[in-house]
Image 1 (cartoon, rainbow, N blue to C red):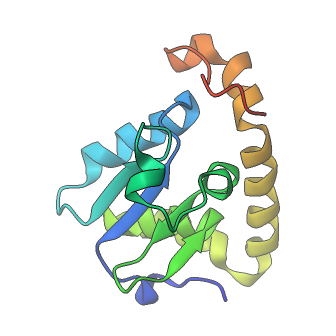
Image 2 (cartoon, rainbow, N blue to C red; image 1 turned 90 degrees about the vertical axis):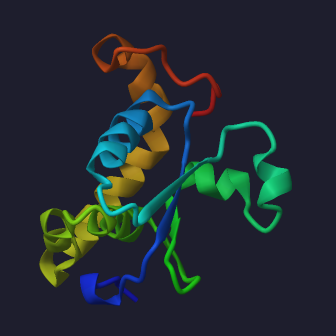
Image 3 (cartoon, helix red, strand yellow; image 1 turned 180 degrees about the vertical axis):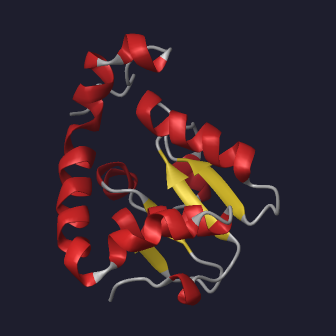
Length: 138
């Protein structure tokens, strides 16, 4: 099932990797845009995460961004990004990536990015304004 903007319930809880500077660029931007406070953000790299969220698999969360919608449904990848952007009233910018002709390309592009984000962060740390990912993963 592909997520549609009208199917997103709030608040949206976004699970992100706080040790990744690429992720943090977007998280900080989303935080500034969240005027209605419909987006909750949880750093999966912080101490105590597994104890607080024992039902969540930190390795799966690190491989692919996850979001929990207000009704409890979990979405991943581009759908999670759409949910987060919709929570800050900017979902129309991401929505075309869920259209049938673009969906497969967007999903593939996201998977390639997600699998390589740690190495990208190391390569572009200077431009990101902070050290590369501290997790040492991929």
